[in-house]
Length: 248
Image: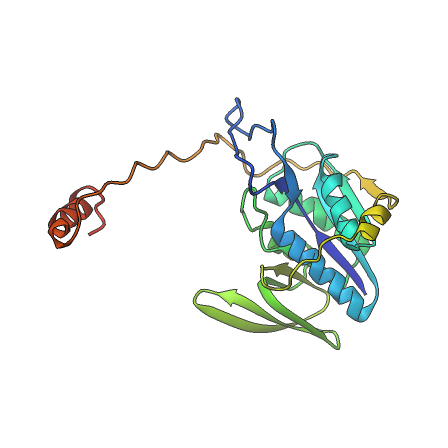
């Protein structure tokens, strides 16, 4: 079975993000990057599918040379091949999806995995866009996945509960945390990843459909206010909630 996983190279969740001087991008000075956490879950699921059904795990990322660090981690986890669609330009979700879909058409995988969203822009669009471009069914926010005789039964999160759906392969799946617990790369895997080549391709240039006009951090929250203690503070609390916070 051929399994493809599409991953992104994103700022570390512990990094303090600053807006760059152009007000259109982040200031990359001192920013550490990582494999997007939901994508890490997707890679782990791909490895588990390979362990059960045999085959090959191919990891794909679209971006600049820095994305090679993230691809190396997936190789260290156990992926068989890594492909960098090298593009140093800025692409919106549609542009990223188009580049990935073009590569996936040539690979013809039975299973395509994404994280449910990337933690940088949080658009949560690329995986479903790719599925549409490939003409494949997709299941998002997957927390459980069982492949049986070419069919797949998935459990996915919905508002206030879970939903069980069934589809056929080939298909696209968007992983949610809880689907599995990603493995740590072993020392043997880390050393082996250094000798595995990362294939480079040039994705087709594509103009963005969305333009970033400005980027700014949200305003700082006002300091808290102590209105008193005990039951005597209730009238003043109610007044503030009604007149200042306007929530009642």
